[in-house]
Length: 127
Image (cartoon, rainbow, N blue to C red):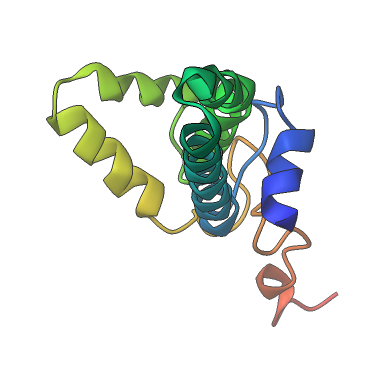
């Protein structure tokens, strides 16, 4: 749940990098919440389905921000998200990119979120 809340707190932060875990945990929890809302609204009254649309709109911007930060983590520009506009292949390609491991060390978008202090980069360096 902490990953979900972290993304919501950074809802308009398109700078920096996001780990795979951050992206996928947000996506998982958001999907579960969505299904729960849909299930409850259909159990109470199908006319309340608008609640699920409201939730989807509420998490649209944080979802976009975490995708952009995830693309930054693998060294791609956030604009690379537009690859999804290519029918079928674009969505598959984007999923493959979102599954890739982080670029080791810092890149142009910031330090590696797995190792923000770059401790491993300093091993064997004499001062």
